[in-house]
Length: 603
Image 1 (tube, one colour):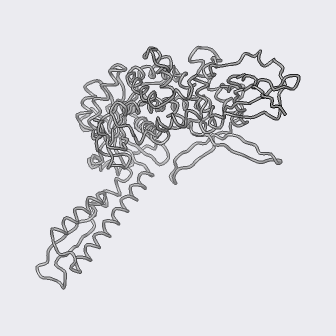
Image 2 (image 1 turned 90 degrees about the horizontal axis):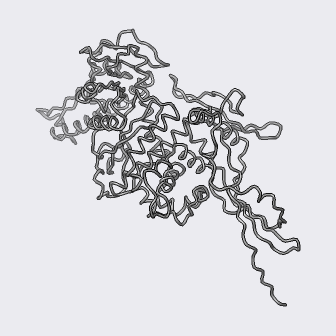
Image 3 (image 1 turned 180 degrees about the vertical axis):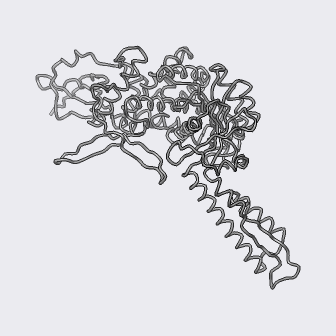
């Protein structure tokens, strides 16, 4: 569910309000429906911040100092009467405030500042490494760019110097790169801390773990990076070197940990290593592992069973052939619109198999098959015409060409029975004969199996709907990769050394944790679970200096007062803040500038 800002004109006035919208699938494709219009909280409702506060401290209203800037003026300063020269009032030094204030608040909510202060004791550095880590993560969360962009552009445009007390000239690439190196040393401790903290905040369950692998590619030669290899690219960049990232998340998409592998590592070889890593960090408890078919091998499943683990995994498509008779029976159970499942006993009695079929998936696979068949047949027709005209006359060349065609149109390679033979006597210019016919068995099997897939599990659960729903939660891991790639822009990686690449991925991981923390907070506030719209609204909130030139009672120029204030949120933004249960600070600080020297010239 996501937020949609709506505007309506009535009686010559524009009214703005928020609608909570949900995307869902139907037999005719994706649709959207209105869930609710959001206004102020009702008396019976609690804000998201209040709900979090109850879990943290047992109090109905937690302290809001977590989201307040560190500098405040003495209220007594506001009582000082001054004469202001209205002609000289100006607004200067406008900075992005709302989104960085939110990012820093999430950082403190997760107590990452405290744990890094403990893990990296203060030394001779001018800026604490915990603060540098906060800058790196906030930048990746708010506006993902390079470290050079942080130095040259981004940091100066934000109010982080007021919130953190670090001036812009102290934020440069050398310090940021050194901060990444120090942060990488704390990876395991950070994962353990986040697991405990997130579990405390959101009452997470760890009995069902979702595991998936993706890849991200590099720009550059990467000569000093031992992990940069060429392999199967999920980004469609096979010409680039890459690394593989294995991620373990909960059913809510909350990350528990990750590992980085060489770019040529196949998915199936990572399972044992990632399971052992999770057990080392969190103990060997009986958990259910959910993995797609790229992770499945008999060796991996035996490894999980021997350790007392349970699993729900996808299977290679070829396994469907063994259960062809079950596809035509009618004992299916509908789990949602357009999706049906059924249980099938395993061959050895230790496993249960779940057959599933989807209308949407059937239509998609049928369209793919149809497209490949049409391409294959058109190419065969072209070969036949060339053979008849004598342009194609070498049998070996024709067979090689057929092989390349079968490789290119592999989904339809068995759809035709193709015969290429040399003619004993030439027919005009023809030296070869190319003929083919449809493979009826392939067509029948394609029509029967399109939209179907098979799951394996050693769980004792007998409800096929429950097993299928557990497996389909694997989409949370896929969404995690989509967020890190599209929203946090983990790709492409420009760093060239191994440790710097690992540090870059760790910063992206921490930014993703902030993202999911905000999503969980929004869910409790009734704002859906898609933070993008919320971040765009917070990005509109600025801070700036209201410059007030003063004068003395006798009309002489006085000191200049700079009030560093935060812009007033509009009514729609106030609704979001009210739902979250937090309040924006109105003023950050007051700066009194000295009375300017006045030089009088003689006539």
